[in-house]
Length: 275
Ligand SMILES: [Fe+2]
Ligand SMILES: [Fe+2]
Image (tube, rainbow, N blue to C red; front, side, top):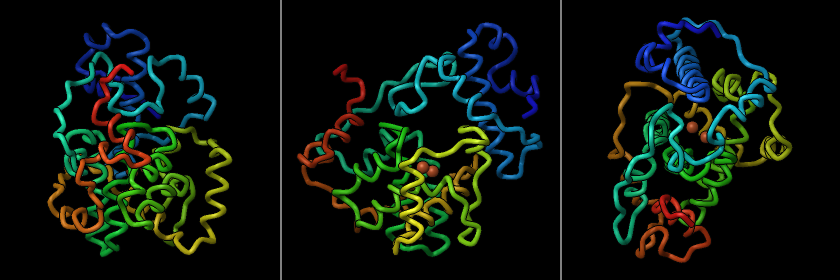
């Protein structure tokens, strides 16, 4: 990728700001900038030539950062020079909607856009719900987020919805042009152009190809691809009915219901607890 230095400096607040950054912060800022540029390019708006890193180059960046990329977004602010925020307090019996509004803010816009596309193209309510939820667990954990997300939602949503959340992660690595899913340039950039998915992803893909529910996670990936549109605002309102109908909200509140994943919800509610 060709970096336009002036554009990059302007995007982080000017040359003076860049001069004050340590090398780690500069590397982070550059990475954010490149991902943004690639995302624009993917939408056909940018003019950046495609030159993707190799997987080994991505690997070599690990010890240039002060955080690990798999950490949940509630727990770390990866933007150079910025701190984490004070979070809004949660009510005594929090609902999914409350978590969505107060804790899932990093992924909420992307998930809303994804659900919006699923709704507009007439997909099933299970899939619309899966799209709305599909990346929200990244507040807690980014690495293997399909598996974490499916586990977190399994006690509360239809089986097809948690299946779709679980396996969208694997299917994102495999194109299916007939279904409308191309391998994204964004992945060539964040994993490296020669990246080979780990064995559990390969095995799950092999299993899914012959599974009767293959299209459930596939449709999440189809909506995922179109869901990085800056400036498009979608509210939660069109989806409240689907959430009310399909999300089995525990009366004690998520995190207080003694489910096998109650601690997932508590950790998201109280990420500042030291232990
Ligand atoms: Fe995802
Ligand atoms: Fe996504």
